[in-house]
Length: 348
Image (tube, rainbow, N blue to C red; front, side):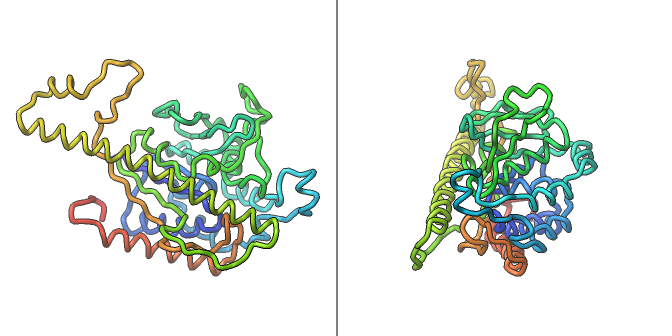
């Protein structure tokens, strides 16, 4: 099957995803044809694709908030700045890890990475990719091909830059042929928390989606008494809503495709010819790609049962808590695998 790994946003909560990714690679020896990353998922995706698991775990267990972000004067930021924090520390680590040599290895290995961003000027979801031949132009997003290592690093940074908290990034600045080099880009999670739909459009038929939002949540008994705490909690509410929507539509699509394939298989078993099936389910419209032409689709969703540490938006980086989240990811995957039905998958 054509396997895709999808990693949602969540800041420091990405440590949970690291635990899942390591177990998928080490225990189950899975290799992914496509990796889609949003926000913190964009930081994880390239290392996961290249199986550089030790570097990945170190990135998510050996840094503090101060190593990555530096707070501006809040009053000055509101009136004269573009963000509450700088992201110089994060930028330095992106340059340290995603070197020109790393990018060359990534391209040589033909790894298909999709990084989601949101353009502030157009409000569009823009996906930057290393895939030389993207399977689709994007039914609800725009595709941009990554041109070189610096372009790649900027796309990673933009995807990880939570608006208001971190500065926007001019990904296409000084890039040859860029139509709008001054456009600013921020966290793709503003439009797409988890790129399941993007993975489907690449032709993947077995999807592993790691969501960092909790499967269930309980009310917070606290009171929000300042601007920053209200803003942070509002973002948490927004993330929950976007996550629910991102999961609902692909699940409906997958159920539709799988149902149609079951109907076609039953009709074929009853003696209906292939030509007749094509007449029933095919289309001559040049712009319509029949979703039922492909194989049935499997969607695996691994996410924490309860809210992870890391604060709203995952902007709190504490090594010990992040190490615990790595373990939570491993446990969550093992629990998921334990509940799979016999024959439901060929990898566990």
